[in-house]
Length: 270
Image 1 (tube, rainbow, N blue to C red):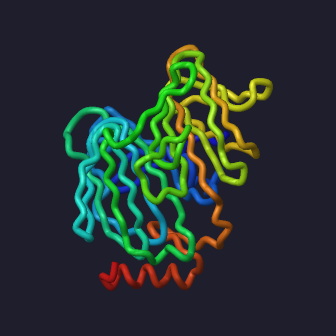
Image 2: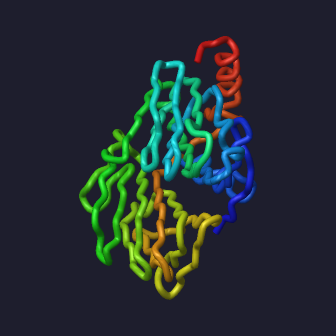
């Protein structure tokens, strides 16, 4: 279990960092996970002005509020509650993510996923996924599972291609959620509403908002909801097992590639 670290990013947006801390620098292939949520506009209204990326993917999952994306490749999109932005930075992109409201709740997650060396210099790609495109399937116990990426019980999510499993399960009070996972994948879970017990019944660990659960070996995930309804994120991906050289918005395999990324950005080549 990893306790989230309060921090800020962009133009001072307040966040809870769950992956990318001293306690958990990364979880191959996952580089960073931030949870953001506030009903105080001063905590987020300055947003994330223009900034570059190279060598990885960013996934933004909105729970509440609106966020406007613009980039130097001509893409523009409005992230509303329930929507997902899946951006493959590849060889380079410069974008902004700015709130489009002056008051009200803003909440969601941003996940950074590393790209393998062979794909780090691929062409940038942007996928703006509206809530209506995300399938929701029923599981035993009246559990409802949103499939953002990957597949669950024969239903695939809208992100393509997807090497990552990304599920959001809504559990009624006391309900049990089960999911099969490739045993060789890295996986984590985060309970962002309510509480849940994670793991086999004889060894279950309680999780609640603010703490990330890193999953150990095994091919089956189990969560049991607490006394009130809960929401459980489940994310898994195949480790790349490659060297990582990262600094700020760039993630490459060598220091030389990292220096080149900074030089390309400064020269306007992103």
